Image (cartoon, rainbow, N blue to C red; front, side, top):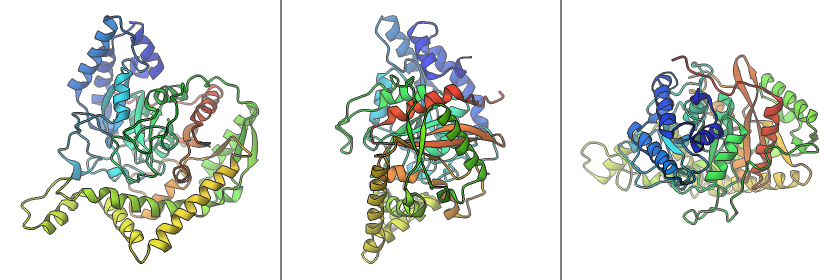
Length: 485
């Protein structure tokens, strides 16, 4: 069935005239209408706009024009990324009624490659969370177990790919928000190097940490998406002036002699035994493929990266969300009697987690605490960067868990913010260092996916994708879960 085909197969079938892009769109739409009643991954889905875009791809082919790399491929967009004419809510009541007046650069590139932006995915409000339980609108379910979370904040993006509602999706990753839900849902999720993919059109969370990236069912599809969305953008002042690579060219390279770094055993304390077991199994498979392993010193991953992240990111979000005051941006409440009323009442639209992080951010930036908190956190950030730089003199990549646990039950951690934050233990270091990291499925435990993470040198995404592509040839795992409809 067409919905089970990957992005490569769909694009080739559309290019070769084996199927129309319109038929692809209709088949996915028909499936999504039933499947999403169980998963609840979508915040919006404009059927008319989707069909119209697909018909334009067919007309282009009928005219004899060459189609792009994503010809007719549905591509779900996280609901904090602008797509012209469609709602952008960030899963917050604060954004209700807003429609984007322009395309984010990544969305424009998807359209230029003849891909079909396919609805907006649910998320934690303003991308703050690790479970998608902070959405103001719905609770997205993990397709492998509806009683469990899909991860966050890109939970809708990951769950939709795992549940066959699209071959590809876009997420944003500030501290693990692409990789952790990818691990929980059993799909491939890549956080590119900071600056590799334009952030123009992304609603900012932590501006020095945020990065848009793709989620796919396999390494090849994820590489295909990177071909399209990466590259320099003059509209983004943080965009890196690097050439556009073809990330699919190196997927079949032999990884014999690959040098892989591992954390010291004591640094895995507190991680579920099932995760440690899967890490060891992954190590043995890679070793059989010719990789060599070495322990690396990354002490600040377990000692202070999480603490530094939860000082820096709230500080940046307190600045970025200050614009949502009911005057410049954001929904207004009732008939305010004063400016103070507008501020107070409009911000009641924000959820508890958003308020918590804004208040933490204001606290650590205040005159009495800036040096002891924010400045110290940035010093730790530099240490983490230097630790990775030193490690990459001896190894090519670092292998570690994506998350300390598999997907936890809905409601299990909502009363304990610190326990929830610990979900980001292994993902935040790559954001702090600005380097690429990729989560990929390696095993199942109690019928739940287990994901591992590869971290590489800056702009070395091709190597990470190459390793996962070769791993997929050795290990056969379910790549999706079809909803019974």
